[in-house]
View 1 (tube, rainbow, N blue to C red):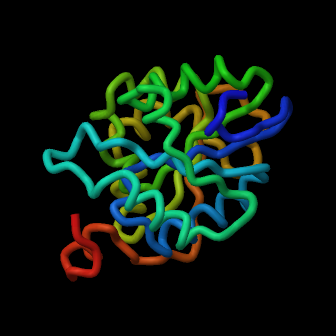
View 2: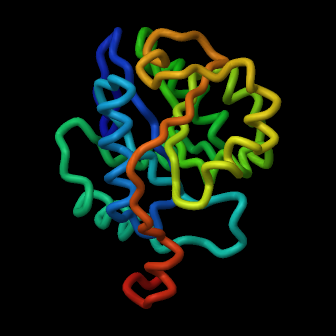
Length: 198
C-alpha cells in the first residue's frame, strides 16, 4: 500500500465517514462509536475532505482540520485521513471507485448523519454511491422524520434493512437508519460561537 494510505486486510469491513470536519466535534465521535458497535465494523476511516462542493465558503486549512480531528477522535479503530486529497478526488462516488480498486477484498460501508440523507439527492452521482456500497445512516437531532422522508429514502425504501449489522454482508443497494441517543454538537454552532476560526 502507498505511503500515507491506511492499512486494510482482505475481509475487513470498514466504515467511511466523510466530511469537511470544520471542526470535528464530539458528535462525530459519538456517531462513529455507535457505527462501530451497531454495524459490527472493523474500522472507521474519517475522510477529511479538501472541501465540500455543496458549500460556497471553503473550510479551514486541511492541516488544522486534520489536527483537530485527531485530537477529538482517540480510538485505535478509527483512522483520520486525507485520502481524498491524496487520491485527487472531489466527489464521494469517485473516492469510492478509487478505494474499491485500491483495496480489493475490503468491504466498505458509507456512513452519514440523517441530515446528509435529507440532501443526499443533491450529491454528484448519488445513485451510483448507493449501488456501490451499503450505506449506514445515523440519527441526528431534528432529522429523523425529514431524513426518512427525503427523496433518496423514498426512492430506495425497498432497500432499507432493519439492523445495522446486516450491512456487513448485504450487497448494495442496501441502507439502514440507526436510531441512537443523540448528541447535538454542530460544526456550524462551534464556528458561530467563535471557538473555531477559518
